[in-house]
View 1 (cartoon, rainbow, N blue to C red):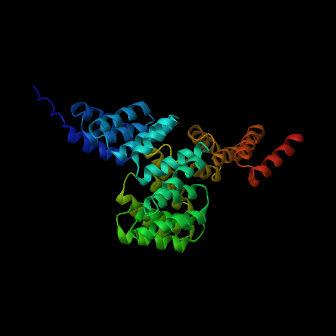
View 2 (cartoon, rainbow, N blue to C red):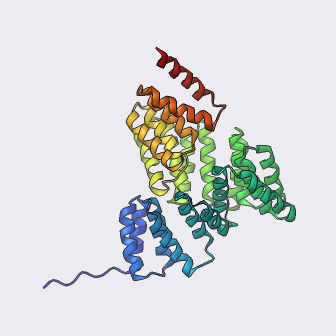
View 3 (cartoon, one colour):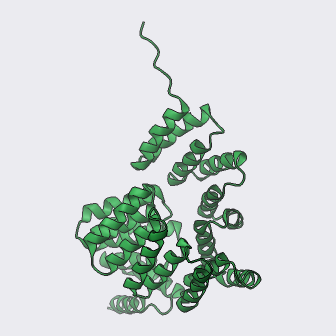
Length: 361
């Protein structure tokens, strides 16, 4: 009679699940982690990774349960509060999301998510007032200036953001997140060399700071130095194999090189890690559109809108796709939505006028 197979330990299941998760095999990883959690339900590493893969699979209640299991063992885990906020946000449970993101502070990622949530709700002014008061109460705290700078950047008030982040660096010259933030502001202003200098300063303090490697690569893409960009972005991924934003920008680089297949693979990898990434559906839809694969472009834009219904960029892409398919009535509806959300968009206005003229004929 053959011997019974040797049962895997929770540790062995976790190791195998990590390999699957790193390869984007989320369903396989989830099945392994559920088995591991049944063996060791209070193992924080198992439950946290289970929450991550359940979130990627859009099993939000299961993700919530896994993260809550972590917090039952480690109630002060800020990283998990940030992840839990993402789950609540995906379910449109905004008050709970805000509460979870606040409990993640002073995590920079948690604060960035809090700012984005307020922006989605059109309430950035409320958050600005709150953090202006914090900055007044704590004028020598670099974090209070950094937080205000993040809010100003989200409002595209770039000079105000620069002033606040410079105050933060005056108080702590080794504040890596502040150097990185200043670099991203310079990048949005087209000051790519100044941006790269800030990323180099951050990396001089912490050479393992993946965000700085990624953003250095982004500025190189902006300068048309694609091969150099690939090197920097791949290094960011080496440092953090689950860095969704890095895979997305790797896709942008491959697209710029004309590598259609490589770009699609990286965008799909981004979605497998973070299905709520804000730009990947825009990039993926545009990639399909530019290659005249309109049915795939339409699907990408619609999936993005299911997650971000107020994204005028996604509505613009979907409208353009409908127009290319000669679905003029549907296209006009999308361009009207764009103009409701962003009245100054000249592209949508021109396309709508063109379609309305065609419909008169």
